[in-house]
Image (cartoon, rainbow, N blue to C red; front, side, top):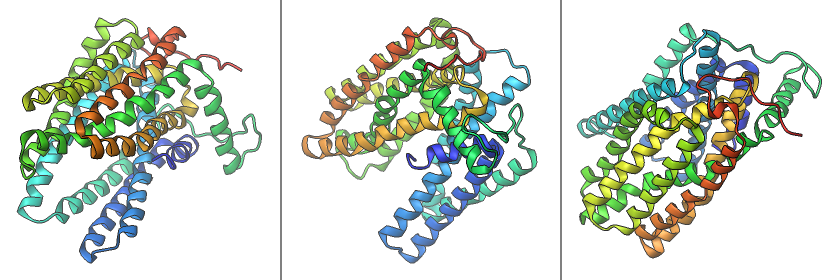
Length: 373
């Protein structure tokens, strides 16, 4: 994800969001099919690793492009409502799909075998490709074709111009930079918190074969994604400034993660997981609206991809360390450290708040602020 985020974001900004989406569906469908093939032939580990890299490539084609496509289309069609509401609706649909897919996938695998859900997934991706090919258009966005500050109009020059402008309008804008610097702590730690929930809950339950308990963690997160999306408009009303919402909600979420490590009662931990997942889901659309309000359309996909890269970078550093802590001292210790690491994002969010960016207050897309030298 870290390797491919920015290059695929540049693809979306140079050749279009639709092109990036189509490449993502094809890459994911092919790599999912290769997973099934390796499973059938008992492929060696290194082949699984290579195919997993291709899966990561496929997901990065979506990460910046889809969000950029949505925001540009909303702007071009005259949408004047709050961006949070739109992102929240998308999150509700995504959570519904995650919940339905998790349940259906497990049930189908139980009735057939582990390969069938993967085959069905590849088929769904191919259907998505056809639908996007026929219906999807880049509304409100014109791919970069002219010369930029670096000069030149060839494909390589256009890529270099997009990358340079992304630094100029992204990293060099203080509010955007501070938000990106917070991402490794919130995004990176949240990946570990989610994946460690299943074995930790099994430990608390006292039965390592209780796979229904493991599935409960995924169901809770999916359900929280749905409810969190429904709560996002209320969060936006309570906090006039988006950065205030980020500060308060992320602080409470960090405390919830700390308590997950301190409390040993199974049902109390379940309640804390619900609180953590619900808060994380409710504030994510607010963050999306804030960062999109500070970046220009022409570099939107690349900057969003770089933001995703920062989150993935935190995962690269945090997950092995936290996993090792869990091996040596147990899951509670790893959650305590996860809570502390999550709290380290708060000073960066506070710095972003001090910039008083127009996007912190406005509900629609403002003009991006000028970059600092």
